[in-house]
Picture 1: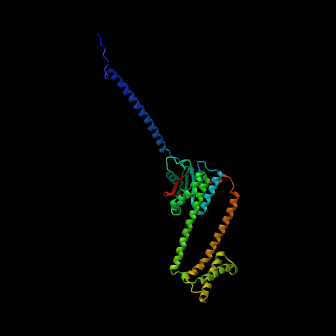
Picture 2: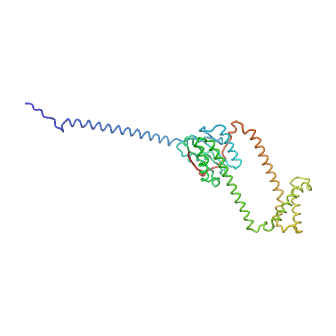
Picture 3: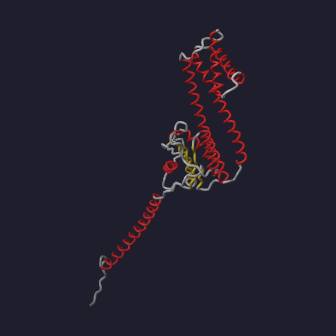
Length: 342
């Protein structure tokens, strides 16, 4: 008689099912690992691409270089005129560069590279200024030449970016932001020059007050009378007495005559004792007056012709107003300045 017994629970059937389950689990693990490797590869590729993205530095030919095309032609010309005025009045060289992005460089690194290539400012004074704007990155930096570190400290530049530039850039008004930055830089430079002049004047006054100088030996009334006598004489003598010969010889003869006349007036007691320094001042007085007159005439002519030709050609739309012949002067930067965003 044939007896069929049930298959044991741990028999062949169990042993046949287990390999199928193990194979399925292994395939799932391989698939997950494959997806992870693909994801890591994509991330690595993006990182490598970012690390190797280096933005080329454009050649310097204009005071305003707008690669991003965020300024109109009229706005570029207006900023160029501002930068020319800044250079004329404050003797500093400033340029503006607007680019979409700095690539893998930080805005500080990129600005440093640009400054090194453009060499803004005088080689002797290192008084260049560079304003870099990365429009897509929303990053900006004003770099200052090493010769301007005291006049334009990092704190002052930070204030310019925060108070004048950032609010305008938030409204996409690049022209106003840059224009206000240029004006603020000019204001800070003027304040610095005035402060230095006041310090020098204070030192001179202090030296005369503390020392036993010539001004301590003569009263204020006598100084006023002497200056009046000298000025009247130096004007009348060349016109009424020494009317022939070269103008410088006439002024020199007048100065010697004034010196002799001063000595005589001092001798008869009209003035108190006059130190020798005042006689040297008498000799130099014609030279001082000549230089004063020449500088006054030059300044007057400069302002006259500037307003005349500025009015005639200031509204011209020629590309020449973009200043196509601009170049650096060999200056460098030690890393001074400030950065910001918006």
